Image 1 (cartoon, one colour):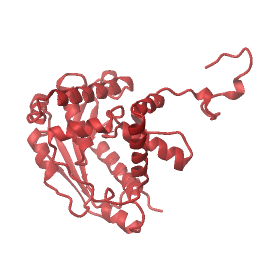
Image 2 (cartoon, rainbow, N blue to C red):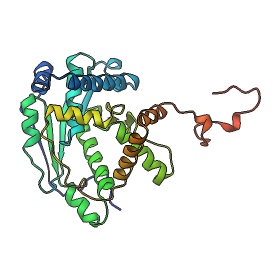
Image 3 (cartoon, rainbow, N blue to C red):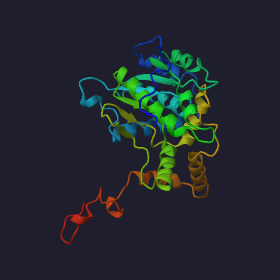
Image 4 (cartoon, one colour):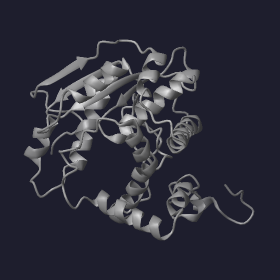
Length: 304
C-alpha cells in the first residue's frame, strides 16, 4: 500500500520563493483590498467573515503567539480557489488591525496536473508583496498511476498533499498550516462520516498532527460558503479551477452538498442550527463509553 505521508522522493520537487521575504502588513493589506467594492452588501459580508474568523481564532486558541516568546508562524495554503484567496485576504485584514500576531507565509502546491496555470498565483502574490513559497511536486502522476479513472482521487490526493504541506511547514519553521475549509465543508464531512464511516466527526477548527509538531488551523470553520462566494466575487480573484478531482462526477461530498442545500432551501436556518450542534455536544446523551463514564454513574454520583 502506498505510504501517502511520504511522497515518492524519486520524483522531481522544486521550491520557488517570492521576491519579498518579510511581510509589510500595511502594504499587503492595502494591495489586497485595492479593488474591493464599496457597496453596503459587500462591506457587510466582509465584516461578517472577518468577525467570524477572529471569533474562531480567539475561541479555539489558534494564534499561540501570546503564550510564546516569539510570534507563531503560519503557512497559509493557497490552492487558487475562492476559499483560500478569501482566507488570505481576511488574515491580512486581521494582521492590519492588530488582532493576530502570527507571521504569515503563503504557500501553493503545484501538483503538475494538466492545464494548471503556473503564473497566476505568483503574479497575484507578487502584486500583494506577499512572502510565499511555490512547491512543485508531481502528485498528479502518483494519483493517476495508483487509481483507475472510475475512482475518485480526492482521498489519496488530500493525504499526499497534507504530507507535503507538513514537510514544508517544518522546513519553513512554521507552527501550523492554515486551510480555507468553511462551515459547509465541516457539515458535509460530518454527514459523510455519519453515513459512510459510522462515526460522529466533522472538521475541527484546530488539530495537532500525529507527530505532534504541526497544527492544522481552520479560521473559516464558522463561515458559510455562500458568504465566501459573495466576497470572492466582489474581490475578483483570479480563480484556478481544480482539474484533478473537481471535474469527477459522483463525488460523495457533492451529494452531501446537494442534500444540505435542499434542506436549507426547504427550512432556512437549518445549517445554522447544525453548526450550533457541532459546538454543543452532550456526551452523556450519546453512546460512547470512551467519552462518558457510564460505569461511574449511579444514584448519588456527581453528574459531569
